Each structure stands twice: as structure tokens, then as C-alpha cells.
Image 1 (cartoon, one colour):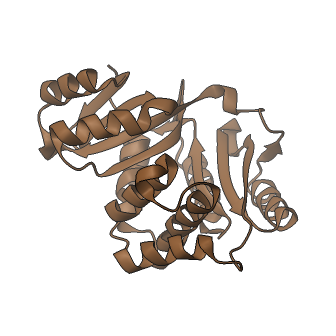
Image 2 (cartoon, rainbow, N blue to C red; image 1 turned 30 degrees about the horizontal axis):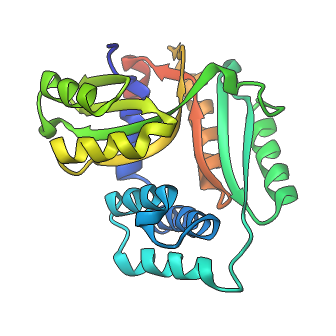
Length: 247
């Protein structure tokens, strides 16, 4: 079981500390609306919606905002969002997967292409970089949930495939199709998780040791994440301790 990605730790803290709450709430609400519109509006009968609601609650989205997002899905005026994945290379050839939900494919594609081009990157075709990632379920627990051995045992019994623990917490991974089941078993054993979601997990992250490259890459990721149509951005890189300290 490898030590957890330094970048993931930084990203985790960054998400908690820096993200504009209104923008974060908007992205989480959009996922709830789409999940409810695609399936049953009852989270207990809709696994994707259940995960979306759980993730929203873990980010302190108020209950009335969650309920409103579900009701919106049932209204005749609900937007028809399309899920699109963009793939490309950022500065220094770092592979990036960009997940978006949009009601205007042309607008989103134009914006995403522009962000990549201005950063010196290159937007590729679907499938051009996703083979470097695994689509998996990720369940995050704080360090206070238990020591590494305790969490490891609970994860194995729950059906997880991998666990990474460090001083900041525990990251538990499972097959994407098993996420609901594994998350439920872990909740019974360890309590409420900090986060439960599907992710693109890089298979062999490239370590970035150059500050200038890291700054350019982080600027591109921040620009992408700031776009209202973009839900998630994932890269196949780690930051060295020295570089991370200078960002």
C-alpha cells in the first residue's frame, strides 16, 4: 500500500480552505439535479443521487439547497445538462481529465480548449489520456477515524481494493461499481466519511520538481475549476515537498 499522493493532500486541503462556497454549492447542486433527473428522485432508490447528496452534506451544503436541487429536477423548466469529458495535456505534458456538465456543448468546448491553449497545453481527443487513469470509488476518512491497521481491516472487510493512509487521513479505493456497497459497509464500521465519490485515479503520477511548471499547471487547473460548466479536474502528477511549500 503506497503512501498517499502529496498532491492529493494539497488538493484536499485546498478544496477545504480556498474554494468559493457558492461555486462549490452550485457544482454539487448541479450533480444532484442531474442524478435525480436521470433516475428516481428518492436517494434511497437512486445510488448516484445518494452519493451526490452524501457528498453535498460532507461539504456542508444546507438541506434546503439539496432539497431544492432535487425538486428542480422534477420541474418542466429543469435544464438539460449533458455530461462531457475532456482530455488533454497541460504544461510539461501532464495529463489532465476534465469532467463537465453543460447545457451548451459548443460554449464549454470552446472555453476548455482556450484554457489549455493559453497555458501552453493541448486539448486532445476523448481517450487520449484517460488510459493513464483508473475509474474508481474513493472514500476519505480523517485520521481520527482510527489507526492505519484498523482502517485497513475495515476496508478489506468492506470489499475495498486499496487503502492509503498518512498523518492527514485515510483514502480508501474500490471498484467504481462497488462504491455504494463499500461506502455503506465502511460507514457501519467507521462512521460517516469525509467524502465519497467516483474519481479518476492516476496510475503512475509524474513528480513535479520545478516550481515554474507547478505554478503554470496550478493556474490552468484553477482556471478550469473556476468555469461554471466544469465539475472536476484530475491530473497525473505529484508535487515534491519543496515545490508544494513554494506554491
